[in-house]
Length: 141
Image (tube, rainbow, N blue to C red; front, side, top):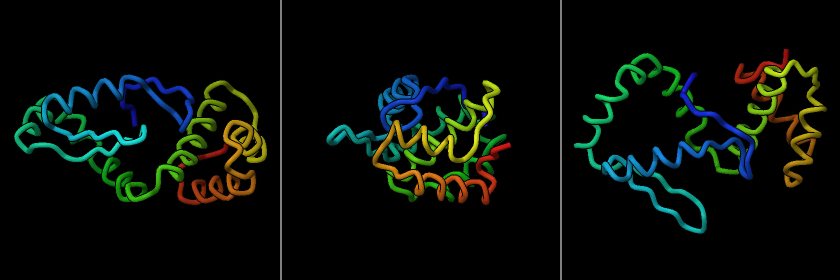
């Protein structure tokens, strides 16, 4: 889904600074409560009154993508930060390799991610790739 951010690989997975800018703006509007504790973000809904403004600005995008947004929240919304880190890193690396016409295997992806994030074993990474592939969240070919 095109969301307008330019991601790069960062400490805990793909990252775009503009997301922090947008979160600050949502906080300013009281549309979100953002609490930072030990460099971890806890993002909670803000005041309902701000949602009218948000919907005015993003309503068309929300309507066009509501099924996908709902599916993503349903599938990934309850996962831990560590699980999301692995999933998003896998997704980012596979898409980056495809966009740059780099031939790769699961083992290549697993080795690269393990080098970047050694706390994930290569077997754990391959298992997650298999899971994502079987649920059609990534395609290796």
